[in-house]
Image 1 (cartoon, rainbow, N blue to C red):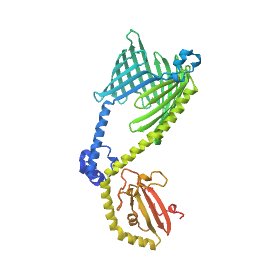
Image 2: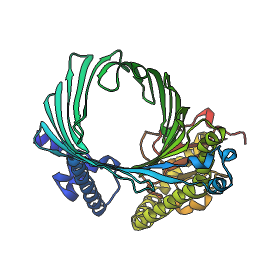
Image 3: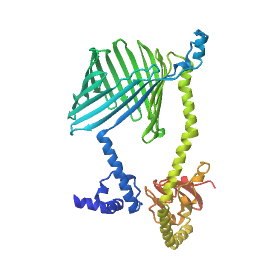
Image 4: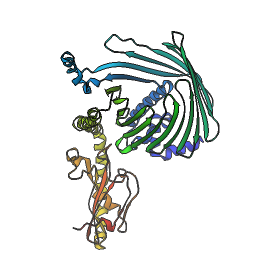
Length: 500
């Protein structure tokens, strides 16, 4: 096995360069698939140190799995109050200055601590507070839970919490077969005045098909009821329908979530209706950075009114109206969309574009010396090809075969794209002679893969998308084609012929 591994390493130039630079530890580090094969030993060592740091951070996060959130509750109903006509003059003066107040705030945080391979302890705290102007009081709760993994088919958890009373709860999961599983949850909550609540929840899940799961749940306590739910998930969507029958309310819920990977956007729609009234929610989540997501949700219902939820690092629940009002719905839906569009186009998009350009310029400066060395190597190789290319070109012209008239490799900017300022001749290399040298019997075939490793080629624009543009004559007719860096190329083809 060791001999086979050595043979595999020595036969792969990329893995051999890693082994020569950082040793066996480098071969065991994940993430080398994103490293360019043309990097120098020093760059490989720097990349190894960065990957090692990222792997250590991932291990630390996997051990503790820290989670935290900050939530604000804001009351902005005075902005849309419709009772101005019913107030006297003194009250009307106060009403003309609507108040927006923070009525509540909560902090939650939790960490996990693996005790053994099968036991995990979780510490969490919940610190909500009433921040009303009348010196409201707050309350907090700290809980600790221990989960025991009995097998890959069964686990159980016990939790103890203290704060505004004593809370004891248990949870369990059990797989009953290939397509059937059951979960259970029971709790006892004792208040300081001696009263308390007891609850029990049991759920049975069944895999209906490859993408659909059905659930049947029964709840004992306050509230009590029975719920049936069907969930279907695909690669880019999730649909669910549920029916709840209980005391004091019964309702039907339907939800749809659609993911748009090309735009990093997730849209969702939820509708709920029953004995309490109705509620409709629609929301969007936009991924703005690798670790950050911006979300907005608008809910309209009766008797709940109109509310908006904004989430990013913090979450804000803003209540706009206690009743259905067209103005509140308008300012909760259309205005945020217009504001986000304006902010995105005027601030976010230019900022992201500027950062990308600065990062590209920084990488270009860091690679300038290596690119210059690669350019000199390519020019030396081209000078050795000239006599051979002259003979090949003369033979192809006599038979009216394949003659390369112009070829460019690198960052090719299309006219009218608005990005000409970022591209220049330093991002392109003339590869007319190297391509003509590869012509055999009036044919040129390039296999799939980057073309920067071909004789006479080099990478003039590292870390950017590159293309190969070729203009050639075949049977004295002009042809032109442009392909991406890693796409295969086979010429001549009738589809490449130009009218001129």
